[in-house]
Amino acid sequence: MELLHLKYFTYVAEYLNYTVAAQKLYISQPALSMTIKKLENELNTQLFIKKGRSIQLTESGQLLLESAHTIFNELSQVTDVINENESMRLHTVRFATSSSRFMMTIFDQFIDQYPDNTFNIDIISNS
Image 1 (cartoon, rainbow, N blue to C red):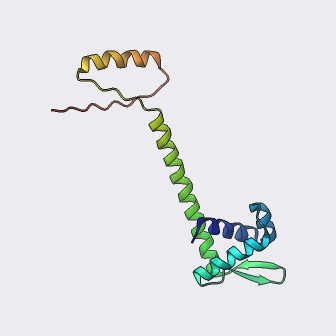
Image 2: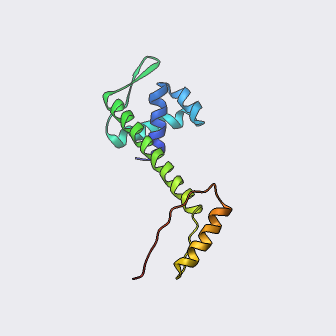
Image 3: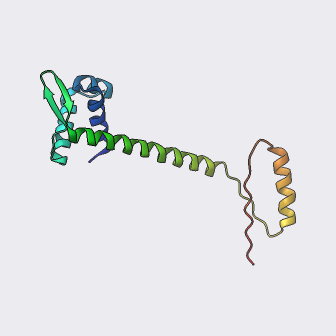
């Protein structure tokens, strides 16, 4: 199952209208319908019931929608964590010295020059 197919499914499930979902996704309605059909074939279940000109989620469709929300929420959270980690990595300054007294002098000067920054100090000893 592709995430793009799952995204398309969630739009149809939330709007309960293929035409509106296709417009919101900037794709054609036939392409959207084909994608949903592929997803149904892959899952071997019907996701929507057509009732006249409207559609409803099946029980399987409702289960998939709940899972899709969880999946996209998890993806959003991990993206935030990765971005935060990358930002932290990009804003990390590392000092290394064999003389701790020298390090403290340099670090004191650095703190004086950049007082708005926060710092974590890791002291690693080879002994």
